[in-house]
Structure formats: structure tokens, C-alpha cells
Amino acid sequence: MAELDTSGGGKHKGGKVRTKKKATRVDLTAMVDLAFLLITFFILTTTLNKPKAMELIMPDKDDQNKQQMPVPESRTMTLLLGDNNKLEWFVGIPGKTQPAVIGYGKDELRKVLVDQNNLIKQSHGANQPMIVVVKPSAQSTYKNVVTVMDELNITGIEQRAIVDITPVELGLLKRDGLYK
Amino acid sequence: MPRVKVARKSTAIDMTAMCDVAFLLLTFFILSAKPKTQDPAQIQIPAATVIGPIPEVDFSTISIGQGKVFFNVEGDDVRKKTLEIMGDKYKITFTPDEKNTFAGVESFGVPISQLKTFLALDPKQRGTITQPGIPVDTTNTNELYDWVHSARLADKYLHDKDLKIGIKGNSQEEYPTVAKVISTLQKQKVDRFNLITALKSK
Image 1 (tube, rainbow over the protein chains, first blue to last red):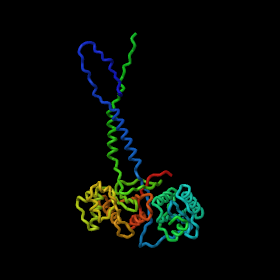
Image 2: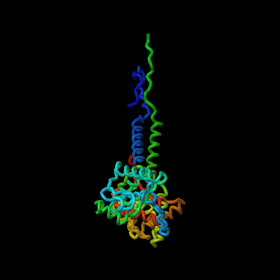
Image 3: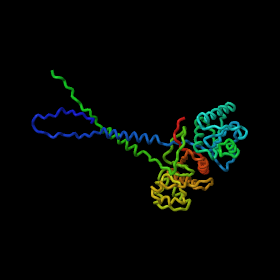
Image 4: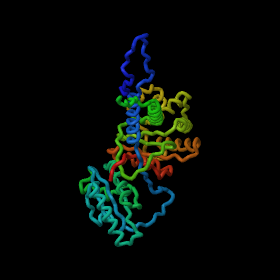
């Protein structure tokens, strides 16, 4: 196939008729093709399928150690995760400030986080960043929590915590129809 | 005048070396590839943008799917030692055969009381039966707590490393199951863990 016949003609002028010597070479082109095809296949399937991990650090939950740092409410933002991929957010104490319902999209949650972070930095100074408290309700999904943590990573908000939801906040979610 | 004839050269290239290299690479990739671990439950992992690689050794995975919890720790030797420590805790003696079988089982989700019957099944059946999941609750003495604790002890004993723990949760899993697992881990002062995610663009 890949070899051209370069022996000129093959006219034997008289004399003995010799048996033609056959080449011992095997054409490897097809084999090489196949091998490289398989290599490509293996490379693509192994590296593209590797799952990765996001690191999550929870605050130390020591039952003996009751002392907790007081957190200024004016720079605390609370995210309440409800059902149907919706969440509520407010800054300060629940009940005092009215929560707003948003989705997890790029131009909803991320925008709110960036805006509030800038506002709080303006009023408190750059070395007093916003603190975000994430409170997943029983009807939010694991994906919601991962999305929120990811958005916090993207927006570079270092001070955050996942905390259990309180009955007052659950009431807010119920009122707004995000919890049945 | 006779024309000068250019000698026709053979166009064949020697493919032997190329073929050797290709197959060498192929062998390398096949051998280095890790077979995908089969999860007992359907798990669709969520996606995130800021992520790092997962360690391949000294790593334990807790899978959460359909409200059930499954446990796996990397390495046959660690798995075997984990079972021994668990056996001591729950006063169950496992035969060497059962230990060897357990060393080959990747992810499992049966209460320890049913583990013996689970290990007695042949590998095909083990893949098809629905596993009830490892019992988890909010108390200090649930089975997952002991499994994680034993695996950490085993890894420390065998490799002198701290076991890293990953949580592989189904996207649509409701949060309480995940919360139970996280609080179980926090009870033994494991505050750092990895959430296994897929890659997503910003």
C-alpha cells in the first residue's frame, strides 16, 4: 500500500526462472494508525473525566468552648436558602430588614454579593469586610449550598460560615413561599 | 543523447520505531488509568468554578445519594485495617476471607450488622442489590462516625498521614442529609473537607 514497486519490469532474459524473493517487511502503517487512535481515546477519556474538589472549612464546633466573637450585625449578610432554587438575603437582624428573594444566577446572587460587599466596605472601611452567613433550610439542595460557596469563592468573600437556620428565619421563608 | 534517469527511491518509511512508541504509550495509559469507581447510588455531582485536585491516596469519600450514605476509603491495606478496627469496636470477628473481600469493595452502604451477609454475596450480586446506606444520625455514636474514625486511625497507623475526607453529594439531595454527615465529621474535629465537584466555567 505505502510502498511503490521500484523493481523495474522483471523481464528475465533467458536463463533460469527464479522464484521471486518476497519482502519480509510488513506494512505497519495501519497498526500505527490504530495505536495512535487508541492513545488519543484513552487520553481524552481519562483526563476529561477527573472529578475535582472544592475545599470547605467549617468553623470549629467545640461544645466546651462557648466564647464567641461578637459579630457586628451591620456588616453581616444572611442568605436563607429555600426550595425551588430560590434564596432570600438581608443584612442585619432578621425581621428588622426586609429580605429580598433572588435566584442563584450569575447576575442575581453574584451581583448582590459584590454590591453589598462594596457598600459595607464603604461604610466600615476596607479592613472590615462583609461577613456572610449561609443558612440552608431543609428544603434546599446540596447543589444550592455548593453554588453559594462557589459564588463566595469567586467574589473573594473570606468570612463566611454555614449555620443552622433559626425558626424566625424559617418563618420568613414560609411567608415568602420558599418553604412548604 | 541518453536521458539521465533519476533513480526512483522507495517511498516506504520504516514504521517499526513509531509503532513501538505508540504501543508503549498506549500500554502506559491503559495501566495508569484508574477504573471508575461504581457508586451504589446514582450520584450527579454539582459543578463549581474554584476547585483543586483530589488526592489519590490517604483519601476517603463519603457519598450521599437518595438520602443514603456510602463510605469508601482509598487503598486495599487501609480498607482492611479499617475493617479490623471496626470489628474490634463492634465485637464482630471477620475471617481473613471476609477481610480480603472487603479490601476489594470500593464504596459500600450497609449497616455493620449486615456486613457479613453483604460480603458473602458474589461480586455481581453485590452490584445489583440496593444497599440501605450506613446509619447516620445526630448522636455521637452513629456508625458513620465509627467508620470515619477507624479509617483515620488505620491511615495514621499504616501511612502516618492524616486522612483527607471528601463529600460526594448528589446535586438534588436535600440539605439535611448533608448536614448530618457534616456534623458527624465535626464531632471528631474534622473541620476541613473537600466537596467533590465537576468543573464549570464562570
